[in-house]
Image (cartoon, rainbow, N blue to C red; front, side):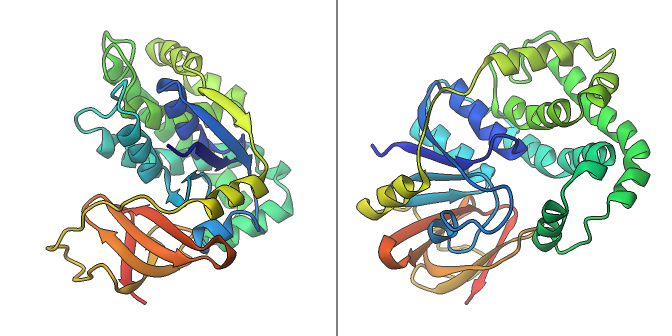
Length: 302
């Protein structure tokens, strides 16, 4: 089996989700540090234009968005199991509602120290102004919302160590991202907003103790060579009743529906309720299969 390669950077909250999954599974993996902002010359050849972090690479298969990354890791390494009940719905809550609240609180606190190059990059990524003054203005009300989200974790823990019971689940991994990021970026406000949520504070320590598995650094050029030397794995089955009306072989464009909407074009390989897979002739890298989750992404004929 090809090795697990994670393209990420250490301060990325979404990358922390994947790193914790790697810790839960006690996996060996290679770490490729990518730039925080564009350009990303060693990432775009793999993804065909997708620029968000993290990206998972296993040989010539490239997985974009933590939803599909976590699903692939769990499928390839099913022990210990982590997906329970409605965990994928919890994951989407953490990625969207809770994360946007965390964004407002974080940048309301640290916005004045954010470099202009980062602001410009995130404006291009989101298609909206990166307005620090507006974030500072809403940070106060959003603190109350952030604590409300955290209180859901408090109630969800009940008498258990984790949201999933006695062992960590995908719900824990997803929710922890926001707690981790606020604590890292603005530790003072994080401590204040978690005050009195004693179960959540204990849970945070247990999540941190899970670690990140066994990490080994890798040069970006080595990751590109790994893709060049590999061939994509067999794709998942397609759903003949997919509402898009698209079938394998069609030329398509895939876009995120929230931000970073640059289209990634290729030949459709598979489409079903969980995943969209496109094949790309990636120049000197030959053939790459790029995987996207179905929820949160649109696909159309190119």
